[in-house]
Image 1: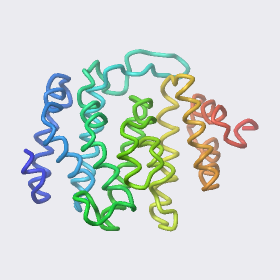
Image 2: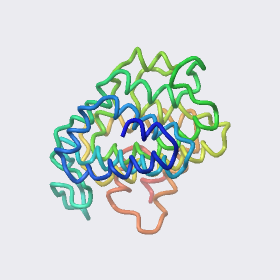
Image 3: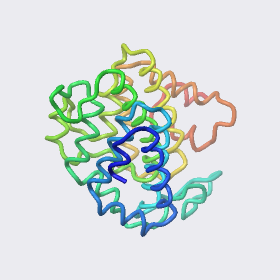
Length: 264
C-alpha cells in the first residue's frame, strides 16, 4: 500500500479505496497507526499529489480515520440539547493511536509544516513548489475544521515547537500556523480559501461543547487573525445573516467577540 500511495494517481486511488475499509473499525484504524511508513506516505500523498481526486479522497479518508480513532468524542449541542455520544459524527471510542502517530511522531508531524510552509528550503525532501504548495494548504484547511470538532486541544497546541519554527512559524501549533501564518494573502484564491476556512471552523465547533480554555484559545486565534486581516471579522459577522443559522452558532460568535453579533 505504501508503494501504491507513492505511485501514479490511479494507483493512489486504489490504495485509498483499500484503506477506506478501515474507518468503520476502531481496531483496524489502530492497526494502521502501527505502520509509520504507511501513515507518513498517506500524509504525503494527501498533500503532495497533483491529482485533485486523490487529494479530496485522502482528505475524506483522514477525516474518517481520525473520527473513528478519537479516544474521547466531544459532547454535542443539538437544538440546545447536549448529547453524547455524537449522533451525526462517526466519532467512536477509539484508542487515539492514529492521533498520536500523526501528532506525536516528529517526522510525520513536521512533514505537514514542510509541505505547507513557504519558508521550506528547496533541498528539504518535503519541499513543494508554489502551485502544489497551494493545493496542500487548501487540503489542510479543508481537513482542520473537521478535526477541530473531535479534538481542538490537540490542534491548538504545539507538539514539536523547534520543528515548527524550523519552517518559519512561531511554533504555536498546527491550527495557529494554518489560520494565521501559512497563507499568502496576496494570493487571492488562497485568501478566499482561508476566509472560507474560518467560516467552516466556527460552524463546526459551534456544535460541540468547548471547554473554557479551548474557547479562550479560539477567541484569541480569531482576534489575532482579525488584526492582520480585517476581512476575517467581516466574514464571521456575515454568518449571522445566513439562512438557517443556529442559535448555537450565533452564541459562539458572540462569545468570540465578533462585532455586530450582539445587536443581531
